[in-house]
Length: 214
Image (cartoon, rainbow, N blue to C red; front, side, top):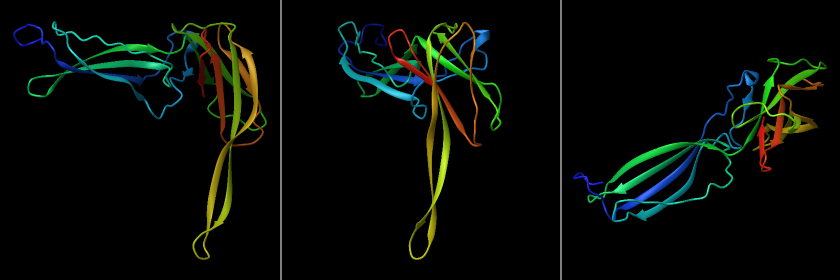
């Protein structure tokens, strides 16, 4: 609109849509303490989905559309900004946000202890919930256990100097397949060596899109 109240016709407009990763959590008491991943790339929390330039109508209106394909962020906020260029060449902006949900099932994990002992059973709890945060039963869950292994090698450098080169990799210790229940389910494994372990749980939603929490 113009200052006088009439429409700003034929205005150059730039519309930008971004997806910002936010934390998914359930308010259900059974899900207390569970962690749910919000995306496969936690190091990048802001994705540019779409940008388009358009010209306003005689009524000053601009309407665009774009497809929300499967994103690397599975839960977050959609941020849409409209920027209109005025007669001075400067932009006047406005923005709106909406929730973004890319899956209809989420799997969460919860440790039962801060640390686990060597050669003693370690119990990890898992839970599958829907968009509303309520537990969903009878959903196949795949759990993978890996152990971090670090090896050191002496590599000859400049002159007679030898440098220590560390190589770290995750060693697969096995997989487990189970079904979710009306409440938390338990997966137990026995760590045979001290060190760091990684437990990953994966489920598929009603459209066969996967969700993984580590």
